[in-house]
Length: 209
Ligand code: SF4
Ligand code: SF4
Image (cartoon, rainbow, N blue to C red; front, side, top):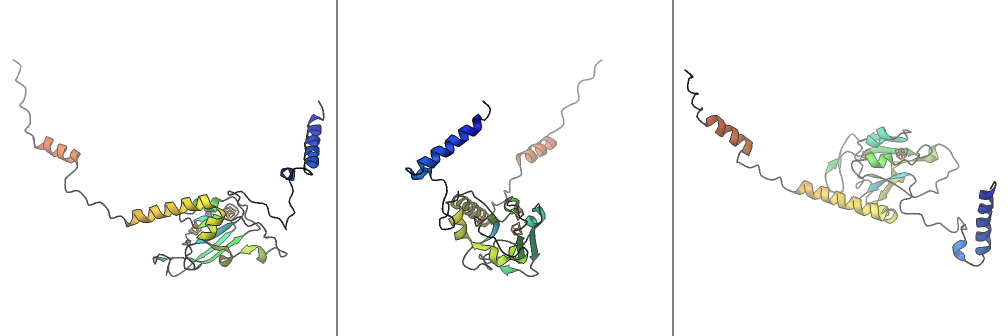
């Protein structure tokens, strides 16, 4: 029937409108900004930089490898690698980003920077109330704005952050494990080859008369 879809839609609207006076579940609007909607765990907006420990400069996981900067489709990440190294939160000397900016007026929340980062240093944030009166400089998120703790990461994406912690702990444990001592016995294939070459050559076949 022509217009059947419109009538069905109006029926659903009317049902929810009348029902909302009797059943709170049917209230599908909230009084924002006084009320905030509970965002799903996988909701994402713009990236942030994860730091371990309490010091956001010392604990920054980012080593300024610039892979995310190269891979970002709209090229909205700007990194300047440090000239020197400084100890990270584990004490290992590392390069660090002297500058790390993301232009959120250009970022399209694609998460490619997160996927390509080999150090689990950049993750997606859930903050969305970022509108500004100025269009340019105010929309440039700088390193100090972007750095947030691993505890914060656990607060917004608990499942994902726990998986990352486990993965990093496993990688750290594998690095600490001493390498297995090299066996002094030669491989079986080499032994077999040597035995074959050492064996006496078979006698020649008898001459046919
Ligand atoms: S966030 Fe990751 S990929 Fe980007 S520069 Fe830092 S370590 Fe490299
Ligand atoms: S989410 Fe996408 S667009 Fe935004 S900074 Fe990362 S790679 Fe660039």
